[in-house]
Image (tube, rainbow, N blue to C red; front, side):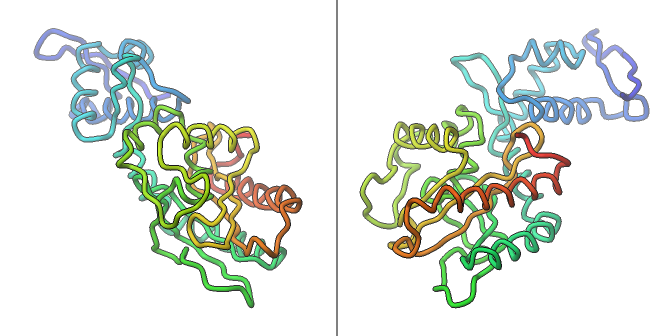
Length: 277
């Protein structure tokens, strides 16, 4: 743990900063708050943040206000708690889109494709969309829309649903605040077009341990996906396999999901040291 020193601010309050970085305590304390929120499974009260970090409440409220205005923190008014905002997830996604995730994921996906004979891809959350960063196409399989660099609404895709199911419900609600947040590519039975339907579907994903998609992206194609998570269970990405639904009976989906989950867990280990489960 870093040694800390206390000093008095202009208003007489005590500010805590690590030695060697006392010239910019506000910047350091902002990062400390973000790291604390990122380490928790749910939002925290400002008083709890202040107590945990040993910071004055007034300083914490000020820093939280600035972070909220810039989208890095979300204030849940009814709960009087603070959680990570979209800006923080965009930073996480930006890291995930860079070479480490692609380099570590590509050989694992290639092995999965060789074993299954079906196409696979790796996607990260970007706002309300999923962004595909790796695609490994199986031989003699049709082309897919999930090419590298393509973005699709996360609630329509197995990859997106796997990631959303691993997020706190408050974060999902923040991503989908109203009906305008939902779009559809095709008319399909049971389409998810409102938050209650999405929430119910994600509950099923959590219980099952993997996500599915039935023709919402491309008619006739199904997908199975599992989230790549850190040791706290926060989602980094999702591994998915896509196939023609009439070629794969529903009874085979669970065994296929187990293979996808195994690859997702392996990537979690390579990225973060160990999976959440």
